[in-house]
Image (cartoon, rainbow, N blue to C red; front, side):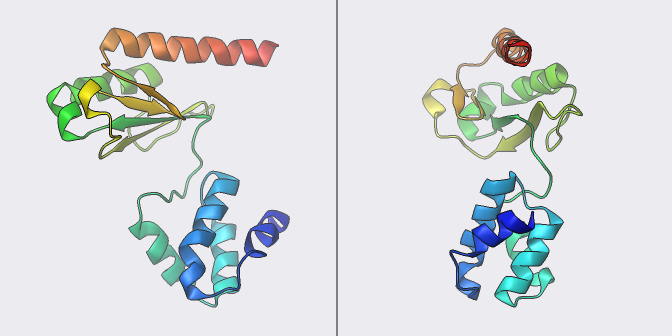
Length: 158
């Protein structure tokens, strides 16, 4: 991790106004903000760790636990809500056997809800990694996760 952090920090001067871009780069590199990275960022910027954590916890874009290979984001915006987002979330949780904010033990899936993904006209929606799934039903959700699991098994055997 030291080598990766050195590469991340090399593009910065250690000024306080660089904190958010530094956090973003660290999260891009590691997929989350490990404790060791937060400590290095604190030392580099000269800011107390409590301040670095305070900034990072304020913004929902930052996470402190690893996410799964397939990061599932369920929309909970108004359009999705009125079109059954609660039922969709229940089905996703059932399919993955995890709750919001959790990651499957095999690190294949993580689940979070988001305020809006911006596809209100085709609600309810979810995004998995960079793919958007719209007009969701319980059946579609089952098919999506079965396809992903099948694809993962084929890739692991190939």
